[in-house]
Image (cartoon, rainbow, N blue to C red):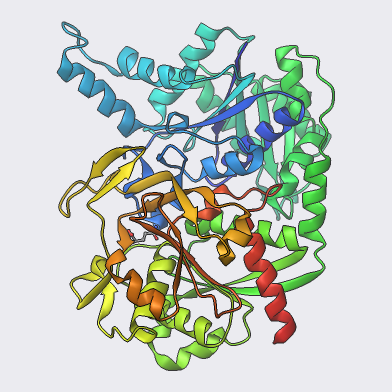
Amino acid sequence: MTRFIFITGGVVSSLGKGLASAALGALLQARGFKVRLRKLDPYINVDPGTMSPYQHGEVYVTDDGAETDLDLGHYERFTGVSSRQSDNVTTGRIYSEVIAKERRGDYLGATIQVIPHITDAIKNYVTSNLEDEDFVLCEIGGTVGDIEGLPFLEAIRQAGNELGRDRAMYLHLTLLPYIPTAGELKTKPTQHSVKELLSVGIQPDLLLCRAEQEIPESERRKIALFCNVIQEAVIPALDVNTIYAVPVSYHAEGLDEQVCRYFGIDSAAPDLSRWQEIVERVTAPEGEVKIAIVGKYTGLLDAYKSLNEALVHGGIANNVKVKLDWIDSEIFESEDAIHNLEGVHGILVPGGFGERGVEGKIAAARFAREHNVPYFGICLGMQMAVVEAARHMAGLEGAGSSEFGTCADPVVGLMTEWARDGVIEKRTADGDKGGTMRLGAYEASLRKGSRIHEIYGETTIHERHRHRYEVNTNYKGQLEKSGLLFSGMSPDGVLPEIVENPDHPWFIGVQFHPELKSRPFDPHPLFTSFIAAAVEQSRLV
Ligand code: GLN
């Protein structure tokens, strides 16, 4: 029997609802249950793929090629369960589907309305594409009271009735702000938030209360009384110093126990030793390496969420703290700024879009190559390393990417046709921007004896992609002759997936996003290897 836990948030945004959901998923999993996490996003975009990272943080890509909310990254990192397109739905997607059905005539005769047509479509998303999960955790994006969220709240209210209360639970995440002048945590915003939920017919069963300090028993009692829940179901969610401490901390406060109690499930306490070990490694590392991330969206760390975490995982694997120095690549467009890279133990140029700052990324790749500093180029970071090699190793001074206009030697160019599982995908330069990149998991064949082969320990890999441009194989021979090895290609040999510099301590560029598949308890081999190279480098400088 699949049970559904609907997770809403109140009071303010950014309370860590995604992390709380992921942590509860991990706890239920540690109790031996099969879980799946889902996110319902009330915004009108069909998916976050067309949004600026400044608006909505990173776009998380799944194996099946969905561009999704970054919370799905938390879900995967905490549970190891691969997400799918059907695990993230937005208002835009729901309406697109309902309107397409209306045009087809599927509802002939009916007036299409939010209730029941939109709410039915939402419920259908919540309960479809499941595989005997014990629990489906369904997070509603935004904050209770948002206009866009109403159809979703109505849908989960109806779902609760239809499933029956023994299969549905409502968890509400709130904040108890600390008011220094009163010296108290305040419960009123939580009371109001629950009232707001009640006004749409949802009585929460469990309250997870974020607070920066211990919640006194008297306040828990008060919240229980005013919000109509039992006192044990008011769970303190205190700040912790690493996100990987969240499952252990919420367990200690009784979260998973209360969920089991609600559903009447008798289950043994979970084994959290692997989480405890991760927390120990993160909080007590034996050394430190400094990595410069030369990117564009450095003002908002959510824009590189998975990258940040994958680097932490690389640190866990090597027992070191990874200190990140976020540098806006634009500064390297003036030559004297390159000294900012002196003394770092590794340079990483992440993915990105648009021309701004690309010359700075090329300069950073050149610095890394010439000074033997470990270099990791991801997607755009790989493409810019190829441009750098073309210009300064192969002597193609006019090398560039056609993403930034015409140039003499487009060593990176727009891909208009490629094969996916034997099916040809076609694109044009002026086609739709939404959902049309090369997206999701693709296979790559690694060259035997290359460094990348040594790192993965196998010759066939699957990694997730999200890009429109590709390294142009017309230049492959010339670039290889000048010393840049194409060590990973698509199985048909058409698309370059990995380049490396065999004469360098660690210089690798990958067209895909390995950070999306790294987990704290299963760090991605590329990040493990990159941080190991940075540790080596730290011994030299
Ligand atoms: N802008 C580049 C492209 O579309 C790289 C994309 C990325 O780094 N994810 O190919």
